[in-house]
Structure formats: C-alpha cells, structure tokens
Length: 226
Image 1 (tube, one colour):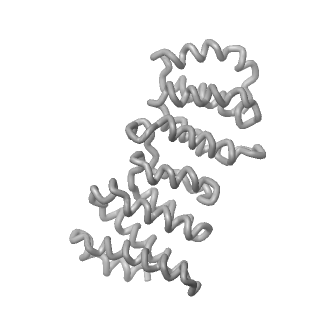
Image 2 (cartoon, one colour):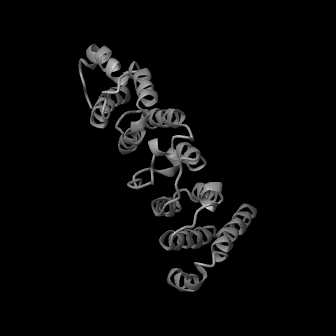
Image 3 (cartoon, rainbow, N blue to C red):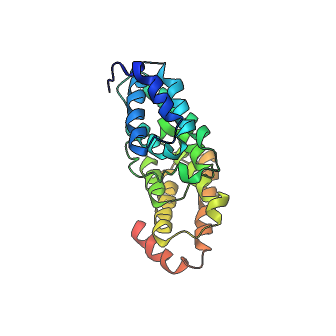
C-alpha cells in the first residue's frame, strides 16, 4: 500500500468528500489510499480518515470491510491503529444508522477475538448488531483460544433486547445449541468461576428450550453433538 504524492491532491479530494459526487467506488479507492499510508506511518492521514467516516457515512460498511481485511497489516502497531479506527468508525455510525453499518461476521475467521475484542463487544451491545449464524460460527471458532470472552459475547447477544424481539431461525438456533454444548464442555476445570458460568450457559439453553418452535428438534441436535 504505497501512494506517493497523495498529499498533493488531498485538497481536491477533500472538496469531493464534502460533495454528493463521491460514489461508493470513489470512496473505497480513496479510503484504501489514505488508509494504506496511515498504516505505514503517515499520521497526517488520520484526520482525513475520520473526516471521511463522518461525511461519507453511507459507505461505512465498505470502510469496515477494508479495515477488517487488513487488520493484521505488516506494521508494528497495526492492531492498535485498526482498533482505534474501528472505535472511531462506530462513533461516526451512531446507533440510529443501522443501514449504514452492517456487519454479519462473514469472513471473520482470521480475526483473533483476543485482539479485536473491544470492537466486537461494543458492536454486539449496540443497536447496529444483528444476530446471525455467522456470528455464532465465529464465537464457536473462538471458543478454544478465548473461551471466556466468547461466552461473554454470546450471552450479551442472546440477552439483548433486539434479539429477544425477533424469532431466531432453525439454522441459527441449531448453531446456538452447538455453541452452548461446546462452551459447557470447554469449562472442565472445577472452579467457582466456571460453575457460575456453566449455570448462566444452562439458562441460555433453557431459553432455547422454552421456544415452542424448537422443542421437537432439540433432542435430535443434542444426540448429534454429544
């Protein structure tokens, strides 16, 4: 990611950012340019990026995908820089702009929860978050390396007001059962903390069992998992 002489043409780009002429492809190309320079150490690009977040909010989902794709860029402090940008991106979106920032956790396999946890927690607890099977898949994947954080985020998502107002599909509920069983089995050390977490996990399982649409298939799923 090297874009020499970009600073020379920034005034022109800034005029475009402030106009209605900046399309999706323009925004993505421009963001890739300034974002690349920023990761390579050009701190002058930070205010330009933040300005782009605010004035081109309709393209926040595009900016988010670029950051997540390059989260482990080969620079010393890439994770720190990206976490800061992700935080600022959420600030720009605001909870009322659900359609401007949409992330389902698709293609998140390369992201270590331990690294990106602050952003994921803030995103999951916001009104921007939509419960999806991709989210559950990601939590299942992260159980081995970050069991406590995965369980915490899964519980936050399951207990959210927004999730409680919607019926989960059979496909998602099946994966939720898988997560609960795997998480329960993961906590094999007999500590007080694990006992409390297991109780909270069983409460989530009970919540799914109480769903009349799902009770007929629960036994079948458990037989496959256990």
